[in-house]
Length: 448
Image: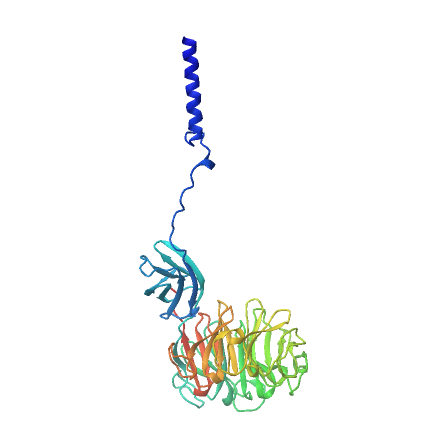
């Protein structure tokens, strides 16, 4: 009987285990055989579909379109690449936030009830506060900054000590504006051509200046078709050019026609906008002049050095890597020359006034430009009477000045045909306000 009882117990245990497996319970249950669980409802999937504008200065309203956004959501915050802006409006699928000061360039993001949504890239546009730096009215007077007088000044350059050099074109002089604001004549007397001591030398419509690390000043002496240099010893020498013409060569064997733009790279190579020859030239430290882009024939064409065409190129600047940027005045464009000599267009198309990206933008005879440490170009847009900024992505924005076609949303200053623009070692921008015979300063926002 005990044996029979033991067999019955074993059979009962086996049947129990078999039932457990069939019912899907127990440690050995197969998860595939379990009943499916209902999906978890995470709510609507939020997505930033658009921001407008994508480029703006502080205090501007940015409209953010978000699919699936509920205006009754709590904890809604907007960040401009990590810097929070105030949310002023919440509507279905739409938020409005204010650009905070000095918002970094980068992705805009929105936080909704602790969940972060990443949106498109936002580009911050600086607010530049204008003031008069030197000059008062047409004339030829030295002295304190606000008593000094200039006559249609055209271009400026800064030395490493914070002094400014100004091509005072119709006075046929180079003026020096010391860091303390005192204005003096560096070189030039009356219209003409004469080398020698600075108090006897003559210039003819000087149009551009550059300064090397030793403080030597280089002059594009446009009316004399020469490149001149003012030494620290107080003399002017002709270092290249002579009679008007077009030829490469060493020193006086080279020929220019109305050169009107100068810049110098870190190695001491001087780059020249040879305006009358519609070409870009360079001069080595040894005085050898060569053509790097363009030809005597005017026109517009991008491409290799021998294919490219300019039309009255004027202002020129160079970046740390040796890439050149040119204000191609009568082509209404800003051009770039790569180190291999290939020319391309950065921005601009036809004569007019329009902000936008690349060819969407319009200029009206841009004359000069300068590059900041972040890769932004600032352009003196002469006949539009404004200063434009070109971001590294090619977006053109008006940052100072007044144009009747433009919206009024930046600090107002009335320029009259600004021809020149420059920058000091602190990144502050100076504008040669030619028609007003003034030098203006555009104070940049302080770094936090």
